[in-house]
Image (cartoon, rainbow, N blue to C red; front, side, top):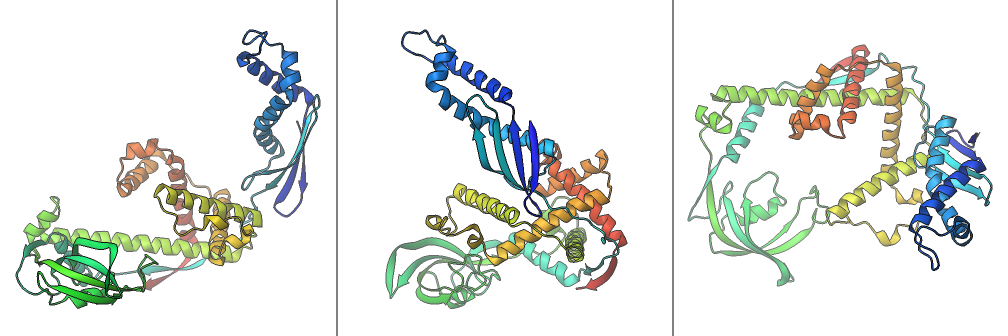
Length: 431
């Protein structure tokens, strides 16, 4: 095999490859013999058709199949021999082969940009600090009490904090819309996360058996964009009103929350500890975001257009596959997938986000080359134990999963960031 690399751009290469005729002939001969074993032809027993006859009648088709099968392997070998690290999928731009001769082809390859880090210590960053208040603990306790509340049916008008069981019928111009009827729906009146406070407010005072026609608007910040800010018109029929009774806030309540708690004070300490951990985690994430911002600002990194496009395409494909698995299409217009070039398919926001992710990846790889970290098996086992708890899995299962390599890299990155933090100039920001 002979290879020749031509630099066609800063991070683009053409790889010219020449394969000797002997290797092509060997692959072709093996393919013909395999074909011979299963070939049936009048006048010959199965597997006994002469090779010369097979070559004469089917040689062109077999040869095309051999080349198609051989190209990916040859390309991989050639890239390794030439020392090329492809970013994305190489493209065969030229192919030349005649019977009895060698094989020549050219591949266009985007290579990963090289990043030379020369300013990664002593970065100025801030660290978020937050002191957990008693009021925050009380809010968490109120939420826990709400989860353990009991309900009893009452014969009175609906009040804030009650539960309403009701049937709903959507109306258009005062007429019921067929197929838009919902029975025995559950509403906790006064819920801060209600899709429409107007809807709940209009129901206050309703009694069991009563019907009300309600006009309301959904909140603008709903995740469902089709409903956000939309005006609706419904007929509501109240079936039942329930009063919620919260448990007493005492040691018995704490024991009901979890058998590990013997007193209310223990539960409060546990809540404080969890909230402290969450704030510490957010603080670390915020610091690391600022560290990466500093590194990106200190180094000029160019992302090739082909690399960015391939990356964005892979993300879009993953999303579409997930949507298809869920039986959704998220409003994607498949009929116009090919109406425009790649650049027109992605928004400025998508391109900026993709470019930052790729730059961050390159910086991280450069940091790995600069900063040596060691992960012991004891450290990795402890890390897996913690991550498995977060994922609801067993540490043993996680260690055997295909993700174990990625998890080890995650821990290595944690250690790299810790070293960067140890040299950084940190300003504490209380919130």
